[in-house]
Length: 324
Image 1 (tube, rainbow, N blue to C red):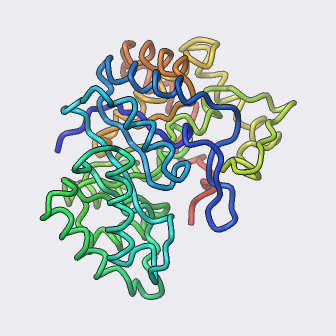
Image 2: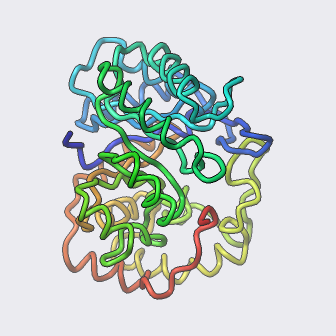
Image 3: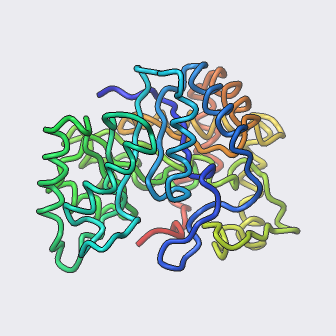
C-alpha cells in the first residue's frame, strides 16, 4: 500500500481522557463540528491518509472521522490502532480483545474494513506471552478482509524490532521530528531494520506537540489540565523551553518568525529521510489545517535542510520523554 506523504492525525480531537489512571488525551476546548470541517478541508485538498485509534477519546476521534467521511470517500486511507482499551480479556492483545476492539472501530468509522491496523504498543505481556496469538489474530483479520495492512506502533527501537520480527508489519509508527529523529536517522538500528525489511515509517508528532513551532513562552510555560498527555512532561517546563529558543531562532531567521512559518521545515526535514513514507501531523481546529495546507505548498530545499541540521544537530539530541 502506498501512502500519501502527508496525512492527518486525530489524537488531539479526541479530547481529554485517561488510560490506567494516567492523562493520555488532550485538554482544552474542542468544537466537534470544527474538527469535522478541518478533516473535510484536509481531505478535499489531497490529505487522504487519516490516522486514528480506538483509545483517542475512547472512540470520539473515530466517530468524528466517520462524520467527516459521511458522503463516502473510497480513496481515503484510514488507519486505526488497538492496544490501550482493555476488556475482560486476559490482555489487550488477546485475540478476543483485538477482534472485539476492531469490531467497535469498524462501527465507529462506519466502514467494513480498516486500511491499516496497528498494534498500538509493544507490551505483549511477560516474555511476550500474548505475542504469537496476537500475530495469528492479526493474520486472520487480514485474511477475512477486515483489515488490509498490519502495522506496529511503539516507543523504543529495540521493542519495535523485537515485535516486528514476529508481526511482519507493513508500517511502523512512532514519534519523529527535527528534535527527535532517532528512529529515522541514517544508520540507526530501526532505520536500517526498516530498509532491510521494506517497512515504511509513519511519523507522528512532527511539531513536538507545538514546541517546535515556537508556540510556548519559557517565561510563561503552559499549564495543562488533567486528561492532557502533556501534563507533567518536562519538555514543556520553563528550562526546557528556554533551551529550545536559540535553535528555533536559527529557523526563524531563515524560514520566518511565526509558528506557521516553521511547519514546512518540520515536515520537509522528515520527508528527506528514506524510511519515512508519511507524516501525520495532528490538529485541533480547522485553522490549523489551513496553516498546514499553506505550508505544504512551499518547497523544501537542500539549503533549507542544512539550516535545520545546523539548528538541531543529531549529536546534541536529548532523550525523548516517552523513550524507554
